[in-house]
Amino acid sequence: MTPDPDRLRRVRSFVRRPGRMTDAQRRALDELLPRYAVNSDLTDLRDAFDSQAPLVVEIGFGNGQALAWMAANEPDKRFIGIEVHEPGVGRLLRSLESEALANVRVAMTDAVEVLSRQTVADSLDEVRIFFPDPWPKKRHHKRRLIQPDFIELASARIKPGGLLHLATDWAPYAEWMVEVLSAAKRLKLLGDPYVSRPAWRPQTHFERRGLRRGHQIFDILAQRRESRSVTP
Image (cartoon, rainbow, N blue to C red; front, side):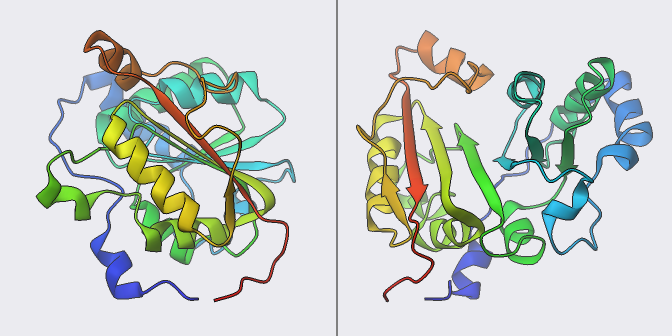
């Protein structure tokens, strides 16, 4: 089944919110983004690197702290970070330079566009989405990133045997995620859908904020089924 392009266009991986840019973040965007940015003409993210190492995509990396930590602690992997919030991108770029991390590239555009136009089927080893906006009000649920069509698109881009890792501190959104992933024909949930934080995921800014508010943290892992054929 091919995802409905009209419905996918209504799902956005971000909401534009104004943020104050520091001078250092602005300089990072001006001077460092050309070095780390994914070429907009690229049609296969794997070509963003010379290496053939496993490829991990993080959607919505926020301030970039977690992505920089993962890249430093998993040097045997390549990372593509997708984010449009300029202060966060600027902060990540500064970390990449100061820590001399060469295994990260940045896409400053919507994740649906990246997955649709710059990623081919069965090419990603992992997709990680940590603490996306839960849109808690029922009338806003349609704005959530985790929707059947989006998960169908993402799972088609993950290699058989690859992983989709979601995390949230909003219990109703966790239930929604499990429901959507359970219905995805290409995916199978791994073990208890509400697992403790895996070793490869650092604690994030949004996670710490959720904990201060007394929220429970949910990590949800699903694996791409080995069969490349999907029964409609």
